[in-house]
Length: 364
Image (cartoon, rainbow, N blue to C red; front, side, top):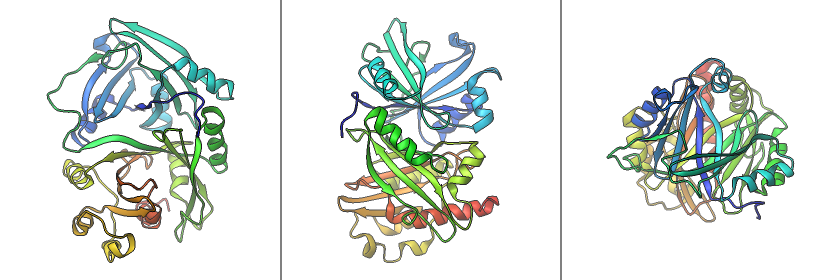
């Protein structure tokens, strides 16, 4: 694995939303994020309002357009609330931009410098699948709260709150039939990413539907981008449902890592976050299927947490319901004990749970 330019990791994910103030309240009260910086009318921004939300090493930026003609407003009208920008921190945004564009990526934002009293903030962006932007961020000469134009907001609450979320594990995209190969090749050709694992329609299927997925990652393993596409089945797959309601390809879910999934999920549920239901039969003979685990099975069953094992260890995971009215974006909570996979052993149980939700929406 050899990237075409150095990558430090995820810098942030930017959500385009209809009401950033209310979204910030939701992610604070339900997911335990802290608002650390703000840009809006009060700071001189006449077109957008943005709230920087942080927890552990996770940074979300929630942005809304203040007038209906702004591109963010148009994006929300088309796609609904969702992740619009995958921002990657790099030591040199110009180098990253040139490396990708020279290899065939479509330019979105030319290399840009913004300066204030805390230094120079540099960034550039290319187009990804659908309307998603891949943004390169260089903070090497900047020490401000987030970026020029943002004012810091202070809180006594630590950035690792009771929910104990610590990092972005992976970001999953859904693309149209035939798009998976093209976008996997895009990340390989323009950024030097490599294929970590490929799941075909036999691996990810139920009686009614199926999908295919390729997981692309950078050379350090810090950036993992699974790409899903629908496969043929008796009924509509969850990927096809997403594509219809999102009006095209986009980011399906964000996996957030924790070191204590039982405490994390308990807090999230108490705060009102809704999760997919797991049948109690899933936990019958669980340790015979996945081997010895450190967590009490009865507590996992109470919370609906899934378990899977690969040759390197095991993982625990659970998936939220969609976090907006459209059945599009949702979150995964994951705790890894050596395992580097994505819960392949849980695919059938997971997708049957999703299909039950689709049926309730009348979309199966």
